Structure formats: structure tokens, C-alpha cells
Length: 254
Ligand SMILES: [Zn+2]
Image (cartoon, rainbow, N blue to C red; front, side, top):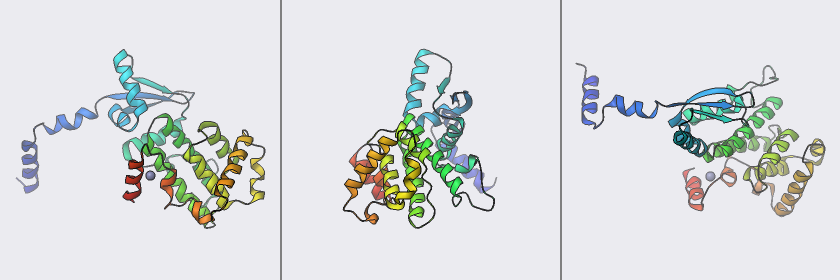
């Protein structure tokens, strides 16, 4: 018998529970999630989903108590964004290449393309809002990391991808004290000039946005751009953390 299989046998014998039983226990129960208005079905492992999302953990508990069918509807989350979320649940990564670009420009990489960049920003903010619905702060913080890295590039002259649609979406779905609003306001204040803000006048909910931008400018008034511009290094400022200890631990991790 080769040395490796002897070793494997020994490990299995040493353990209290047989390997097959241990590994299958968590990944047996499946649950169907119907995403978006047209109820696109996704079949996922209940353990994997509930391990990441407090929203689904609570919903599954309720469903188990009521003995109803293992189906949960999330009409406000589009199938595209739920696809990103399922990938996150299993891999702990955000993979935007899973989603199509409506008008990709040949020859440009996804992040350099202005339209592609803006569309990726939209996907990211929708995933952030989904993270809020699903009560999954780590995915929200992962989105913030991706956005902070993009915004640092814009600061160095790598294009500017904030569009009125992004602001409309965020301002209608987040609370006024939400950190992602600060992230966008900091990026606008550090990269945009007055003329670039022209298209933001006609958008829905413009008044709210202009008020927050004015308030933000007053607060940041005496600071240099370097002190508030979103960068990879400053990303924790915009994270969702439930306590000061959690924030300190996150800052120290880097
Ligand atoms: Zn943090």
C-alpha cells in the first residue's frame, strides 16, 4: 500500500466521526431562491447561504418551523446580482466577469473602459444593497474595497465613472448616514470639477444629493484632498462594522 493512502487511512481511523458523514452533513439540504420580479430560480446549499446571510438564516428557521416548502422569494434582487451573490457565498470572492457588459468596447480591458467601468460600478452598488438586505456585512465591505481601489485609480487620472444613475440608485436605497454615500461624495469632491456635475442636476432625487454634497463640502472644507479622497488604504473608513473592536481588528488585519 502506498504511503499516502496508509496516512489517509490512519487519519480517518483517528477521527471520532467517519469522514463521509462529517462532510455530507452540511451540504445536503438545498433551498430554492426566486430572484427578481420574474422569479428566476437558484438552487443553493442551505448551509452555505445561511452561513453568510443572517437574513436567509432567519428565513430558513421560519420556514422550518412552519414546515413550508424550501423556497424564498427576493423580488428586489435581480437574477444578475443574485448570481454574483451565490458566487460570493461559495468562493468568498466578487467576480464581475460573470456578468455581461451591455456595450463592451473591443480592445479595452473591463476596468479601463469608461462604459464598462460605470456598469461595473452599478453592479457593485447593487451587490452592496443586496448585502444590506441579506444582512451580510462582509460582502458589503468587499464591495467597498473594490470601489475604493477603483476610485484611487480615478484620483490618479484613470477615468471617472460616477454617473447620475449610480447616485439615483444609492440615494433611493440607502440611509442618509450610510458610509457608501460618504464614499461617493468623497470621490466626487476629490475628482470632479463643476462642469462634470451638470448631468447630475436633472436626475431623480437631485435635491437630496445636492444637499448632502453641500453638507459634505462644508464638513471637508479645511481638509486637503489627500485627507479625504477614497483610497485602498483608507477603505476601512467606509466599511460597515458593528463595533469599535471589529473596526480596530479590521484595520489591524491589513
Ligand atoms: Zn474595516
